[in-house]
Image 1 (cartoon, one colour):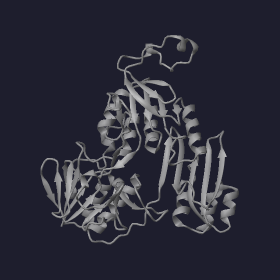
Image 2 (cartoon, helix red, strand yellow):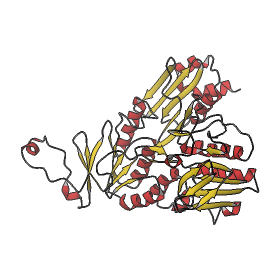
Image 3 (tube, one colour):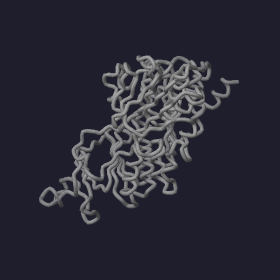
Image 4 (cartoon, one colour):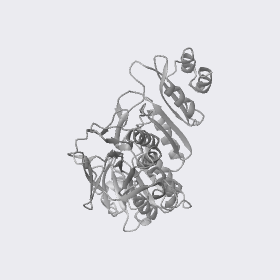
Length: 437
């Protein structure tokens, strides 16, 4: 049996190793399109934050030839096409690889917003190790850095930048930080926390343009009256500094601009393959696509959502690795169903832990309870449907992560505990213990 896996991230590596366990004699080819050994993108911010952590610390498997030792052939090349009719994978170097079973785990790539000047030197995504090297060169202590985007990935990058001692400004077009993870109250609380750590936060703000160099010094009657644009102090910056124009009229100097505006699945090379794509690759409960013998996993796959029963792309590493494991078992002929991924995020923002689970925003006709301690940066919100907990979010509470996930995933009936939790949502640990005796 010839197994081919396109994509050497956590999903692809997990799949390759599980295939080897399930089929000791099959031929396994793992294809990655970057010059480094397979690594975790989620480890890049930690590489940036700690100078004692080398690039090797991001590698998924340490040691010399860890894949060859398992009988896995690792090929470094980009894939340009898949022929489901011929059962071949076409590489950009002109070669083809034949397969009996194929797994597509090509992940995602950063979204590039339509902003003038985004191609200037000094503007980078933080997605690859190559990106990280460039950012590390520019993000020296005291450097002025602008971060575009305060979503989940943006906030992880933000912490690594802050730990490097830069002068950081975060620009988020939403009305709060992490808007796809936190309510208005919680997102605003996180912004206040960041500002207390000397990070400037601009929400409900867009970058309209990036310019090479600093703007001319402002003179004239508008400057005299204080009505002109807010222009930076030129004396503190070199000629290679960039200027970031905001839609509120503010101009920000920047030695470095990091773009974290979201991601999109890598599916373009599948055009003409017959594989059904709707934002991501559609898969069933066995991680199989609509084309026989072809599976998908990870950030590129639109798999089952535990909370809704529908299909969603959940671009988080725990989901990716579980996708890879389930896909590998089914590719090797061991039937395994995927029950669906719980949308879950846990974020450390300069020491403030926040988390969200399931349908954290609630559902129509459901009940909700919210408890806020603004002074101490603590917040919890619970979402109910009938007598079950279906979603939750919290800030400043590390003691609730496990029990909140357990109550939601178990779909246990709360009974009298629903009213108790509505009176005091902090009692979730008591509820969990009581209901699981």
